[in-house]
Length: 236
Image (cartoon, rainbow, N blue to C red):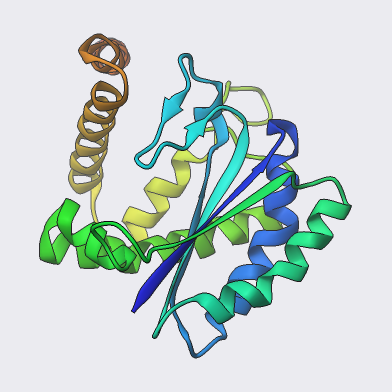
């Protein structure tokens, strides 16, 4: 079982159009192949707007539009990748794609994505991540099909959208659909906040990580104050 990684680059303003055009049908094609064990992708998105630019393991610099497709095949992903090349050419012709870099994992410490994930998350955690990432990619593909524009992470409340509904609602419904209650969801969000702060510290520095935690604490303190005020006014 071997993995091939494909890095697509394009202007940032073309990133979502490329993904919406290419990625949902590509995942359908890859999932239908007997020689593909796993296929998932992730996009650069807002990460490309950070200063200084983020440098990933392996040297890729996130400084414009892009996405990375990771395909694991048995015995390898070569045939599956070759079958996708005409689709890349059509995306180039439409101005949605500038460059494609294909990197088979024939050298380096890992033969496939599962090995890398087990190394980073442990045997059980790595196996879960390896199985979850394709599921999340298919969910993202459904969102790309359904919506012409990205939903905001949170967004600003309006009369038409007072909550406001955005991508954060996906976390809520996913937790609910998997049988978790209020406390479980709060615990999960706290773990996610800690994880992202640690990631910012890794890619930047401790100050950047602490700033993200400070923003979260300020938000939660404001929520607590609002809840106390609401409870007080209700008791009067």
